[in-house]
Length: 336
Image (cartoon, rainbow, N blue to C red; front, top):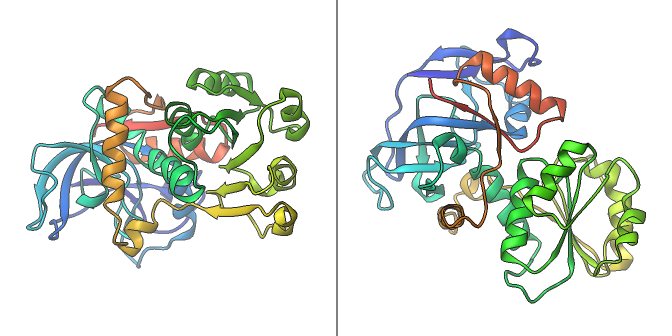
């Protein structure tokens, strides 16, 4: 089968950073489905793994943590799906990635593809939807429902996770949603997705938020650049508030939130699949819920651009765009 992988960590400017390769078609284990991959998207985790993980000598490491496709075969213990089903999912850090014609994934972390979306539109959603959902509702303790009118601040609102979090927060909670962005196009993107307000994270955020005269900022989702913004976030956070993180900051001075009895919560959407937690099927249910919301017109895909077919050259371009920090929403590649 066709695939894209690498054999050594290299800067994306090096043509060997990602290579077209031919690999054996994998055979499903008991709980696996084998997916004929139609579209993939690129996330910051792809670039991080590419620069950190060295595959065994002579072998290819295949990246990719988002896919949409059609089930080609199922394992002996699969009960949730059958061949021919259209699915979308985010895969696992401990297995080969989705940048391949055929991919194995545990059925418990797979959802049914939204009927109203193309494969490209669906591939933009899984990793960011899981991350946003788990961060808000599982880690930060935000309650679904319209009764709470406090404020959620989303730092990095125009990125992949921020783009879906804005929509989920508006649809499923009564919170006032503030997103941060610093360019005219990213500010408008956040507003179009439903943010009540957008503040500029290239300037001190607290004074901008104070001028809005909003309910207390009880939750802050820090999706990027946590370290340079942490003091500002600590000043903004309401007493007994929660800051949720998904990036990889250097050590933080967490005493800044001590006297507010603030909490710091981490989200990693790969925890359930990496450790095979008893509740890993929660991601199956979560993705099906997101698909239902999409098909009902309650939220929309966060796809921004399709970079062409799935090959090494186009994936190198996508990785370079992610590493530039200038992407909006999600980048997708479709077809072989």
